[in-house]
Image (cartoon, rainbow, N blue to C red; front, side, top):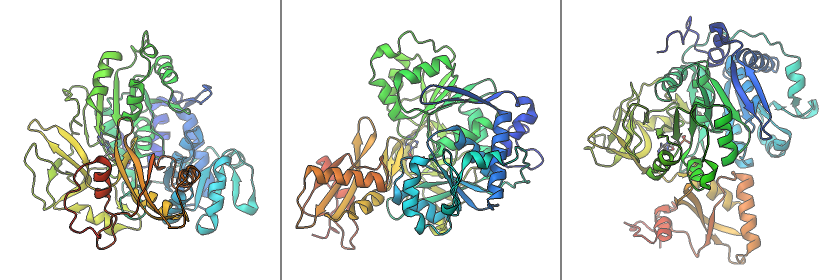
Length: 542
Ligand code: AMP
């Protein structure tokens, strides 16, 4: 464990990332260099981060939230998101983060399942919540960052709330087991599952930030991940700030020229991004990268999807840097397997387990698989950031632990040198641009459209996104397919699920293949799409 990370048994993540940093002499050090989408810069010191998160903790207390209550952020990347996240944790409120592109159904599933008492959002997103509000009896308060108080509707303006709150707050002594962060993850069946973490997770996030990302206090770190995703909280907030590192956060989206201006001008030393973004960079005109002064940049890391060898080779050629692939998932809370400086990269491999992590390839029956053979990627339970349950779904949580291992849902193989190679998922979950999309959620949204009788959704390989979402729909007899209907379908899925989940291709078919118990045979749809053999279809109901 890092010396002095846990002081006097205080595991509180909010405290460790702010007050503790101030006490260690970092009060005036820049914690966050905020660059807005319009390229305005604001620096927040650790002392600012402490005061703002204290105000937010006090505000939640005034609103009647307490230990174990659930609060969500539903915001794009913006400074208030960081204050709210850390403030909630300081007050031992469980903090969930929602992608800002989520639609109504996605919000309802998550806010409803968690029994959220409070959410912070912005005016332009309010409509989505208002439309589902009556179905969320536990939701008492909506804080609007750019809004005014509207008590009749339970809406509170952020500015007035914060102005009335004291910047002094002392986090209660928080145990390692106190629940902390909540992220919803998609499965291939049923509703999304709430992955619950505990304050103890800071141990893994701090250790991997130091030992894998190689952060030390003088670094300027940029993690491009959205805070809706575990990477955005574990490494866009907790890991780096628990070390007192300055983070760059950028409010704009992908823009190659701006990104490279930022890397250069802000003298970023460690950069953590994702394969889709790196592949997009690879397609840019080479002039964008020529003459760049990137001598501050020490290392580039990647996470979320397989990193193709071509990207590493491109980066070596163009940026004069390796890219280190890292593997983890919402449930693991921190990097488990990775490449890292000092370990030879085998392009295409995820690298080796992190120190203290025992990863293995295990067959369904629990027997270890020989090196070179594909099997279930498993991790020996017990690492500090291991999730503690799926909220309201402990049965499924327990099913993930078998034969003395946690089954990650991925398939992989290990070579004789101990490197791990990702093969795929053992379920139907789609990984598009690093976001896990549940085919079930998209199929459900499609079925709400009156014209659609049946639907089946799959992920198929895509050069840029790793996988793209493809839908097969069967229409009710009285309807015919048209451009208008296609547009309606796309908009509907985007508004209900999310823009990420919106099918890139839609095929109208006479029927959706199902097995005898009515389960959609996505494997058969995929084989049809790919023009390959569907394998055993003896259970197909035809
Ligand atoms: P999430 O829980 O949304 O972070 O998604 C985790 C999943 O993304 C993993 O179970 C993998 O399927 C995939 N994933 C994450 N990192 C990598 C990687 N480096 N290589 C291949 N797949 C990855």
